Amino acid sequence: MCGIAGILFTEDSFVKQGLTKQMCDAMSHRGPDADGFFQEGKISLGHRRLSIIDLSTSANQPIYEASGRYVIVYNGEMYNFQEVKNELNDYPFKTSGDTEVLIAAFAKWGPGCISRFKGMFAFAVWDREEESLYVCRDRMGVKPLYYYHDREQFVFASELRAILASGLVPRRLNKQALADYFSFQSFGYPVSPIDGVQQLEAGSYLKINKGKTEKTVYWALGTTSGGHDFKDIPAVKKHIRTLLCGAVQRRLVSDVPVGAFLSGGIDSSTVVGLMAEVSPARPATFNISFSEKEYDEAAYAQMVAKKFNTLHTTIGLQPEVFLDELENALDAMDSPSADGPNTYVVSKAIRNAGITVALSGVGGDELFAGYPFFKQYLQLQKRKSLFDHTSLLRKTAAGILSKSRSGKNQRIASLLNADRMSISHVYPEFRRILSPVLINQLTRLNWKGKSFLSQELAAHQAIFEKLPLLSQVSAAEYIGYTQQTLLKDTDQMSMAVSLEVREPFFDHDLVEYMLQVPDSIKFPVYPKSLLVESVKPLLPDEIVHRKKQGFLFPWQVWMKNQLKTFCETRIDRLSQRDFINGSNLKAYWKRFLDNDPTVRWSELWLFVVLEYWMEKNKIES
Image (cartoon, rainbow, N blue to C red; front, side, top):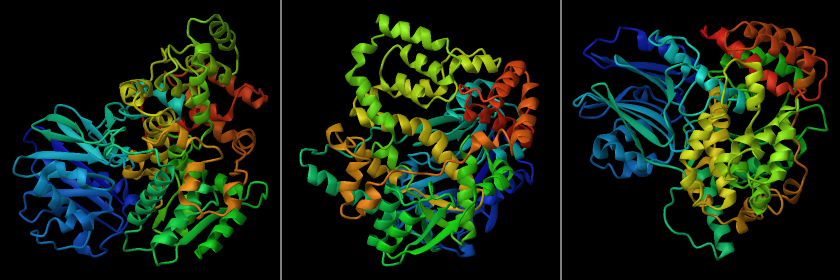
């Protein structure tokens, strides 16, 4: 895993020496092992390397294609690079890594080569002959890529802080995107928290030539490799197991040891069990243990570790460690997010145990209907006649709830006021943190309720309608929370400590198939029953049927005690900014301190994180 950056001037201006180095230095944590640069006239490329495959210096980047025409900087892993390499018998390879395979494939097949790749990646290729720049992002959006484009330049990088470090992009807050942040706890596609900086769409690439950009979407949700027969349920489960085994096996490709997160839950236990099955090496597993037995899952993790004979490490972690690490986690945050600190502390503990690459069970809930929302959406569709937007019952209930001081009740009112009960209308309400009413009370955004997420979901509605109902929720999750919060947090917080995390449940072959599986087969009779039965008898019954725990850190208590000064300082400073209704925000904070049950800590934490991030990055409002 690495970090990439680059600058392309649209005219024949020369890139100032050292600018790309400044960008790469700002994200040195992504690649502590080496850096490298290419500069030629109006183009400059930079790279920070975390050595995973082919540890030799010959694999340092940028890498030139054999003829010298193409140059590449690359972040990620192509898990099937050996298969692709076998199709390039006439290429004079000098390294044993995947980067050279990628550039050789590009030279032979052009950007169409991307369809052959299985992995997580973001890369940039400079065509020296045509003077064209190609920037690409993987199908699921696991690896980030941000860019800024105006009449004079195209600037891109793996992180926002790298783009800002170029000095070419104004440090100005994107106020148009703030409503999405307050609604869904992160900044969604296509925008970012920086005005003018955009996220490259997952499953797409840009071609930049003579100042013009052309986007090509090479993969989208709903893509399928062909028709599938779902009448034979045992065959369906067998095929799911085959896809899972392939996804795990591909992610074991590495020249450094590969570990795994093991919580003792269904998803991580499945990943570890399949690791033991497809590889002769003993998996190295890691569990975060807590002294509070009510929440501690260490015993279940140890049960799984014993069953699969893993090299298991239990890392004891006190809740107070989160407090000690809080500012480090917030400093590591490239884009504001409410969930980041948890991921940072866990990743740091794993990295300190000597692991550079770790597999994670993240994504199992999205694929196998693991959240309550999946069943709720099915029930909503069965009873949607009761929720017809013309019904008196619905209008009356929405009117009453909208007047409540509770953010939760206001969100329900928004759901009842939705024009339709389609997934694109319903999903945002289930994932919403602050209601539109509350956003307009606490800010001066004068928001009308149309979010970037809603627009993106609406653009995919035709695709949703072709999918089974449970898969519609999965697809909405990928576009929303998964890409914009879950994967983003996993990347930025793990890479902040130079840890590469790989997620088998986000394998695109598996995703394509699972989105076609009928509801009658996927319905979770018990938690993630299709996953459990597909890998049966891999998991012990004690793991499958235990009560889901998970450690709940007492943020509500901390913010009123240990973190009170920290939070209050940020609330006061943010209240002075022009887009915030300072008196209302302070009053809301006081209601929280006075134990008003309608005020949730998570709502106020969004404001605290935003102010901290703006101060850290010197962002103007």
